[in-house]
Image 1 (cartoon, rainbow, N blue to C red):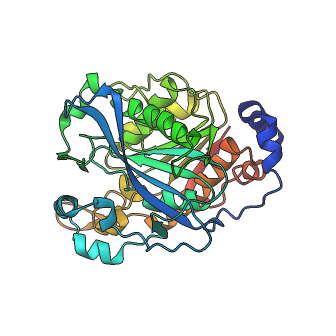
Image 2 (image 1 turned 180 degrees about the horizontal axis):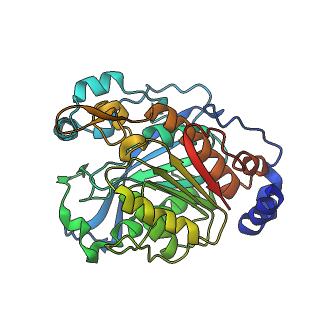
Image 3 (image 1 turned 60 degrees about the vertical axis):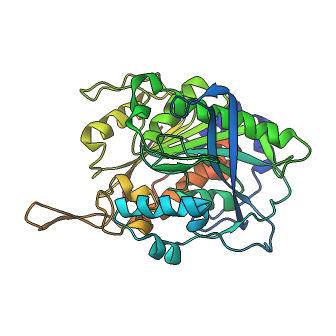
Length: 386
């Protein structure tokens, strides 16, 4: 089984990449060997008019990356993600809608990244993250930081108009349902393709902090919920993506009856689900499982027991009683009917498998294929591979 995966990796990635990585041993249960930097950039796609702002499509983008061994800049804070006074005000409102207190979140927010730290020498694969419907670019900070510590550059943009709130240079844009209309289906995938092109161009330039830092043919993508859809759809539109990891939703097209009608995913795929997801419900999990089953490349399915939709997000730090994977579930009389699984443990497992998956299929790491060959935590999740 493992030899077949090694052969597939060589075909998909190229023997020169595989041979350069095989000697490296990794403990996927630990933070990677690199410290992490984070920066906020604003990128403008002059080739597209935003259907929401009627201006060139503008993407506020967070980038996590390996930094130098001794960063001299301060640790990142939750407030830093909100950019300015107007943004912090918007963040206060957004967090209150989720049942959280902005100031308390800012005081306790767990992060390992250093704001605006110098990027480390050397090239890294590029990973793009896509947030959920009404989410925000930093909603999976725990995962982005972990992957950056393992040697990745991770970029995540607010999908303007579909994020809870986006702080643009000249205005604040709140979420609008217009971004869910059928004609807007490919706005998010086009955002991702633009980011790939633009970041690659910056890496090829001589005067940007990303200059010379990206491996142009080693690109992966992951996303949560609507970002899972975005991941699947982008792989259909952009063949530069070498590995895809949709979480809580995996499909680019499905029926009201819960039938997946996507094209079979041809690239390495890891689908992550929660079996007690109250947002996509059983129908969403059925669609996602069908997407996994008909994928034609190497594939993995992690279905976490008693996990919900928000298990895999920073809702753990925003409102520990939010529900749907965070805290407990109660009936109409207030009786506890389900204690959701420990989201921090599920995130720890998600991080380990995420790093191994992208190591295997963007770096060509043979030892990572060995890690992916088994279910290391059968008490926490059901696991399938092919």
